[in-house]
Image 1: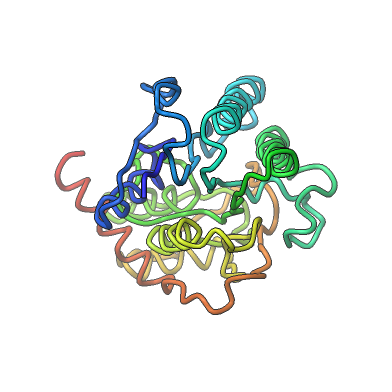
Image 2: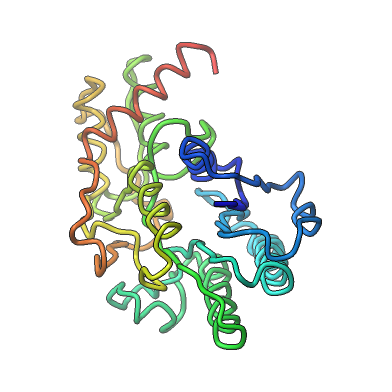
Length: 295
């Protein structure tokens, strides 16, 4: 198949492009340096569009740059949907929502995704992702275009950007560094916040399933339905690297977001997700190898 991937240099994009090429698909990589080049492609020449391009960061970016995030991401998505409708209507689209799109107080199953305000502290990013879904629904209604909209938990695994501030990468960096230098670790919150991780290979397998089967559910949580508390993640990392978890200090004065981001596993009950410890061991090894090589 001929597959266009936006955000091809991001964490998910890099892994997906590698997999697609290994399976001998023709891949057209689109990123921030060549975004407009897709308009030069022949009409109706693409089989699948995987739209991953987004401007966001973990940490305080969502709170400190809401206007920038709103303008840039709505522009990216509007341009992408316009290109799809004008040039590649026959292509199937696979793209991502965000768990931030869910309201804090609803059961996080797909039928509740557009109910209430998005997650407190992440309203702008959550609304941007909701806008994308509404756009997809509108194009399907008018032009009968097909899509999958995946709502993911946090992805993790090797080959991530070492500057990534998502909680799991932050935990790994802080605990490994503390082990090496022999000092205490300060982590945000009280450790009871619940989060879910999806190993990157699992995410790629599920994206590939959508590419290969356009009859899969239109919208679904990319989730195992199982969360761990942050202090449990920290303990597993401590066990792997040999750090004394009693040295961890929890700072309850810092913003930590929603107490729980447990997504309902509606459609993936038969999927075998990578065990947490196995995935963390590979991710930690990648980080330690990068540090030892001076990256």
